[in-house]
Structure formats: structure tokens, C-alpha cells
Length: 314
Image 1 (cartoon, rainbow, N blue to C red):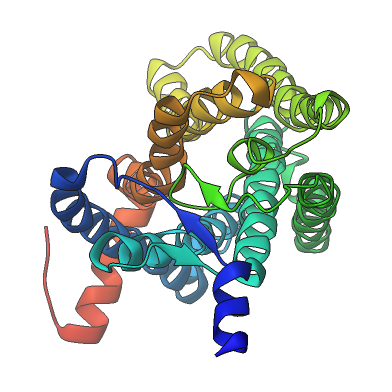
Image 2 (tube, rainbow, N blue to C red):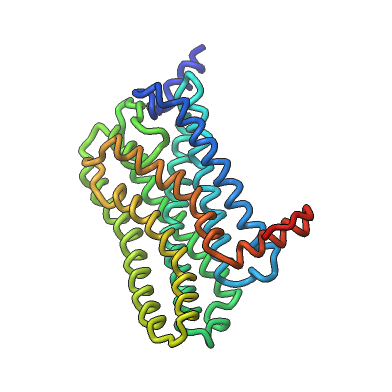
């Protein structure tokens, strides 16, 4: 009995949307559908990028990395959220909370850097087309991707450790639907000014530095594209970058609004809305943004369906 009581005391309570119980069933259905679409879309891009030889290029290597990241990103929070939306006990174990915090932060940090790597790939393809195979050779792509994932997980180790070490004096009610830095820091029973300053600096470096690099790269790309005489080639170059720019906007807009601010100014309702957007909506939309705007991916999907099921599509 003592063991059971002790394990309950070690759990965190995730309030989620319990202050609006009438929303829980509709949100359960919406999140379940969104999660299913995210799984289907991201797994399709990973498989097609791996199996179709015509997508064997640096661009699709990084796109498949983004899909794998989004797949893990949404899986780190949605299953627990669905359980809490339908179950009477809205809890998560201490170990589960720390693991969720670390994994979610690591994947978010990795995506910041990965989007910059993808922008550099577009720069090399458009501005240095003759040197592109040398600049973005297979070995270099693997090193860039490995460095991106390692940097993301290293940053998460620092940020999650700073967050977990703040004493909570027994407080375990989190006004959120998953374990996230601002919500956990709200439980601290000490002055968290130093923690907030350290986390804000790390967040700004990881979010703003890649964002400025991306913006600078696209200024150079735009200058190069405007020098192209053929209107068709110019449109093709802009169209190639449009999907990536849309993904960058969706991710950075919500992430910056959450992490480049002191956690003391954190608003619970706003935090939940932003978290739904970058934790569920963005990973769900990303594969469809790349698929719907990309003729190569759509053609590869048609070829895969034709080979596997004999389905002929237009």
C-alpha cells in the first residue's frame, strides 16, 4: 500500500483541458485524426524517399530526416495526451515526465538546426548548381544530419537539466497537457530568475541564430533567382523553396512565441494553444506541404502505388 501511495506522489498531474471538460471528447477525436495523418504522411515520405531512386538526392535526404523528426516529435506527446483526454486519471510518472521533456526539447532543438541545413542545401542547389554534387556529397550530408541531431540532443540535456533541478517543494500539478519547460518552471518554489535567463539565452541562440541564417540564405537565393532570364526556370526555383519557407514560418512563429520570452510571463492558455500548433499541427501539415507542392514526391507516390497495389493515378 505504501509503495502504491509513494508512486502516486511521484506522479505529475497534467491538468490539460480539464477546466473545460466539454472540450475533451471533441479534442480527443481531432488529435487522434491529426496524429493518424501525421503518422501516415511522415511514414509515406520516409518510405518513398528511401525506396524511389529518383528521390535519391540531398534535398530528399533532409526531407526524410524532417519527417522522421516530426514522427518522433508528435509521438512524444500525443499518445499520452489521448490517454489523459479519455481517462479519469490525468497523470504521468516522474520518469515519464522527464523523458518526455528531454525528448521533446531534443527534437525541437534538432528541427531548428535541420531547417537551416535544408536552407543551405537549397542555396547550394540554386546558387552553386555546378558545384552542388561536390558541396552536398553523400558523406557530407550524413555528417551534417548527424551533427544536427547530436547538437539538438546536447542542447536538450542542458535545458532539461536546468529545468528539472529547480526545486518544486512537492508541487506536482502541471497546468499543461505535457511536460514542457515553461510549465515545469512555474512549479518551482524558488526565484527562477537565473534559470529563466539561462534558458532564454539558450532558446534565443538556438531559435534566432538559425532563423537569421535561413533569412540570409534566402536573400542570397532571391538575388540569384532574379538574375535567371527564363521565367519558367525562375518560377521553378521559387517553387522549390516555397515549401521549405512555409515549414520554417509555421515552426519558428510558434516556437519563438513560446521560448524567446521569460517563463515568468508564460500564459497557460496561450502556451497550450502554441504547443498544440507546433507539437501537433505542424508535424501533421509538413508532409502534406511537401507532397502537395512537389511534383517529384507526387510522382514517386504514384509509382509506389502502381508497383505495390496496381493502383493507377493521374
